[in-house]
Image (tube, rainbow, N blue to C red; front, side, top):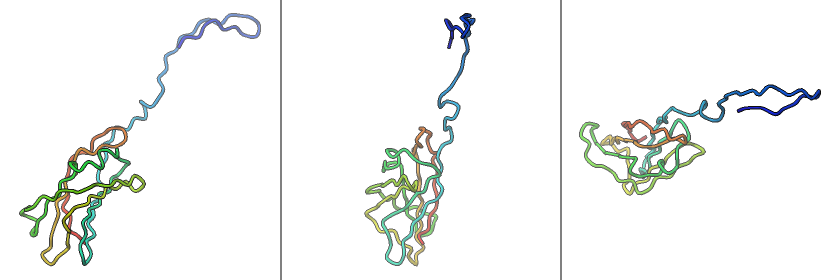
Length: 141
């Protein structure tokens, strides 16, 4: 910015001054990718059709509800991953930073010790940082 043509109270002209400044959000830009704070399956005695993923920061809702960003596989023994479940819907709760994945199948905490491998990928935060793909082994409670 250059200031020129300015006079003081006595009528003297100010010497033109040029200064460069940087302002805005660049210095405070979020460069940290979101991470998963927790994954929960609360099946109870009758089972559930939901898995809740909690993020560490607010997430872009479009990427949070994209069903393709969640892969869930089932296993009875935690070794052989037999079936991939397809989400029917994903609901994002911005106030709690949670994505609830809803399935047609019932997820159970049976005597067979069912386990679920949940993979989350391509979810972005509000600044556009992409969450690093990761998976977690979940046993229903």
